View 1 (cartoon, rainbow, N blue to C red):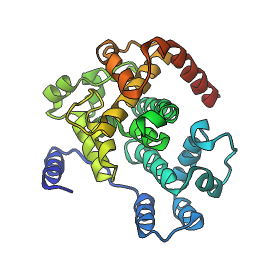
View 2: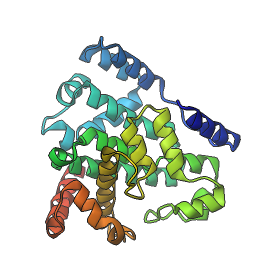
View 3: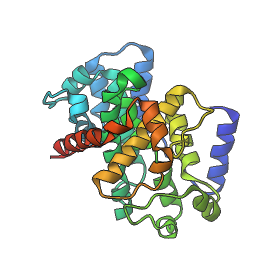
Length: 281
């Protein structure tokens, strides 16, 4: 980790803000894959050490985007159909909710449900547009889970975080300027540090840092991933009959980045909405 990032982590620690450590299973899995000496059986043995991660992995893997229509009932089937590296990305994603405040109060439940739904929509968009975007469904899913992960970190540090920012309402989203004024830190910066600390690819970490904008200074892959996230968030709002306050400002550029035509967006929303509801049922 570079010096500036370590200093940022130290500054957060001084404020009592804790970046969650990676679970033991995830560390073992990363080290095993790094050796290049692994097979489905050895990877499955590592993942199966944590029943909670296994349960969440199956929930994610059974999505049509990943299962390819096959009924996945064993870890070996998951690894065969999805692939080891893609499964590792899913394990990273599902591990996060277990590491940060899952089940401690209703606000956490609302947050992780929303993140999971956005992640599934982002994976669908990435799958549909992979030839244009070159971002794969597992990467988009991982970014969807992680993109707002700074929020529950702040919820754990500041008991009144949700109340002060009115986040107990599922329609509310953090305002960066308001966060900074009230807590002297914002969830995007924290989310970026979590992503870096958990070994996310650089472009995924950058997308998490800038997911409220389309930054010109970042790499093309990061900008494309931000666009996928923004479209997923927009569709999430529409599916749940919420207002998307920034879509009019960024929508045209998002669609251009992903390779979609504005005239087709209504039909595409209907397609995504139908597939989303089919996956939930």
